[in-house]
Image (cartoon, rainbow, N blue to C red; front, side, top):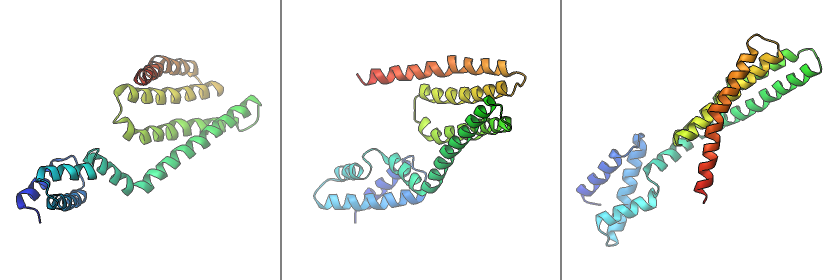
Length: 203
């Protein structure tokens, strides 16, 4: 067994970390104590043993372990959300395109399909896509986050405005102008800035 002060030091470091799950903290404390004890039996000092334990267990920090644990615990929910997002996006986009085609051919039911497709894409697919990206976007620089936000909103407004135009609804031209304005001065600057930054980083 390692000395009580060494065990206390490990407990303090784990508790002072950003880990939220108490069960995970307890498991890591036990794991670190065992690894430190093994390394100290090999003749290493406590500090060196603790460093080696960190290098072997969490080379990229304890946050990585927490992220992996959360992912594994919520894997089924995450996969369900991803499937729902992309399947709904495909089906609603296909419905909207079918409605536009039927409208061009003057077939009955075109307006209904266009409406269902537009509502589905703007109110279900795009919000789900942004929610799915939220975890990754939270770690990104602000320009990357703004690119996705403006891209999502401008796309939603563009689809709504085109739908209103096809169905001859009032305010369609204004909505179309707003969507292009948002796309042009909101999304495109951030898109090309991120492309520029990526090209510079690759040098």
